[in-house]
Image 1 (spheres, rainbow, N blue to C red):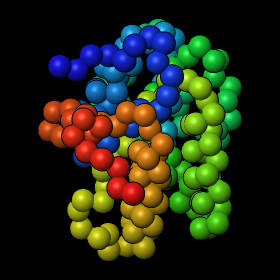
Image 2: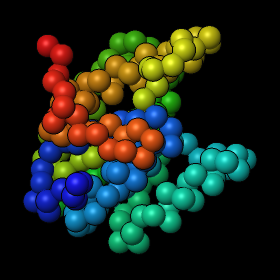
Image 3: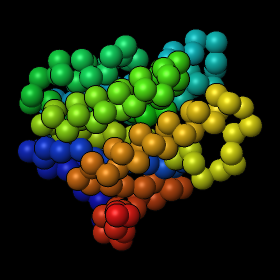
Length: 185
């Protein structure tokens, strides 16, 4: 049985899963006992995409009114650093964050990854990070699709290695990876 994480929990929790697997719902459930919570939504607004707007609406309806919301921060590390030390953070999701940084060259991207991981580890807060599983399918045909997949998989893997707790959501089922798996050396 899954229970929310304890109120005094400090550390990084990663949740991955495919589209509509329940990963965001799991993240929201795990952090329900935390107070206060800041929800960081990383994806760009898509005002002319009705399907996207519908998905955003579902997420908004599930979130408690007491949670603070930060949408599409330009500098996620500065945003995290500005959050009060007694708050918990839910970042949903890594895909939006990677999308924001696709214009960076490889060196800039590597610096961003290092800074972001340092920011997460130095936060000394409860931080739950949601990430889409994108590497289980076909190799993208376009260069930008390939770059997105490679950067996304790399960042998700690094976050997972740094996390104290790891979850996988599949078809509405939560799997606690730490209980059944081991990190690859």
